[in-house]
Amino acid sequence: MYRSFSFIIFLFVSVISTTLEAQQDNYRLYHSKIAEAEKLIANENYDKALAIYDTVLNEYDFVFLRDTKIATQLAFYLGKEDLSFEFLRRGASAGWEINKIRKNAFLKKMVELPQWQVFEKEYPELHARYESSINPELRYRVRKMFSKDQKKALGALFRIGSNSQDKYAENKFAPQSEQQMRELIQIVSEYGYPSEKLVGNDYWASTILSHHNSISQAYVRKDTLYPFLKPELIKALERGEVSPFELALIDEWRRSTLAQGPYVGYGILNPPSQSKLEKTNGLRANLLLRTVETRNALIDVQDKTQMDFYLPGEGWIDGKIEVTQN
Image 1: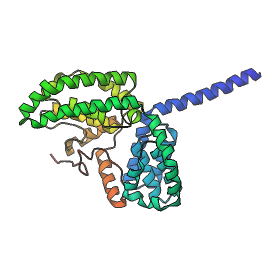
Image 2 (image 1 turned 180 degrees about the vertical axis):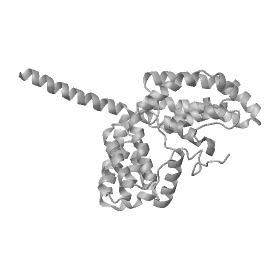
Image 3 (image 1 turned 120 degrees about the horizontal axis):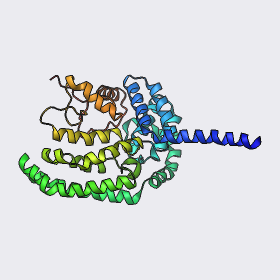
Image 4 (image 1 turned 30 degrees about the vertical axis):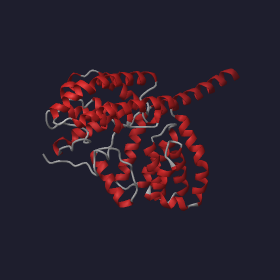
């Protein structure tokens, strides 16, 4: 009887453990919760948004740095100083550098609090956790690939006219890009997608992929490497190895390059039209990315509260996403 009862307890614990592990692997749920929190912030429902961040950041071993930054500011805005320092510590262990924390204008008053001195003493250990969480050899390898990609891409700047640039891209850049793509495919197969979670950087690999997707219309139309890799990128999203914005940007470059004229995209490189806004938001929803309306509302909340939501894409999107009327 005792052995049977022990076996039942073992099964119960195993089921709970398996359920938790499955949830930790399900970053679709993670991103959907973050999108929900962002919508609440856009509607100025800060307390409910903070509750979601608190839950998410405690449920997952790996969390995206941007989310810890928002949670820290949100807690501080609501006067929950101790909670804001909890999130700050999580941010430091996710790679938030202390000099960049100090540069956040909204958090300047945190530096004046007694808790800050404690945090400063803890910071080296917190940062060491971050350093130990990434793969240094893989980081060096991907950074080297990025540098190689950038050097070759610069050659297009010295070509005048779109025909000359396309010729350079197809004849000079494409062969190297194909080699880089094959190496990325091998990396994804062996390690996973090399972004924030694995190498502590979220733009090296996405830049390589974006460049590949923008070589020329003729090249992209016949390309087979990105279509082969794309399903693995979706799996990487589910494993928490890539953010929704990264995938949207990579795919946006392909859509933009293939377009003969106006096209339905994610609203990153080109503004969406009012008539196609629903389709644009549908594409964004497929990757669990906030809607255009939510993103624009977050800009208003930033201006009102002076919090910084570190909205991705500021290199391509200056402020709000314009929605055209045609």
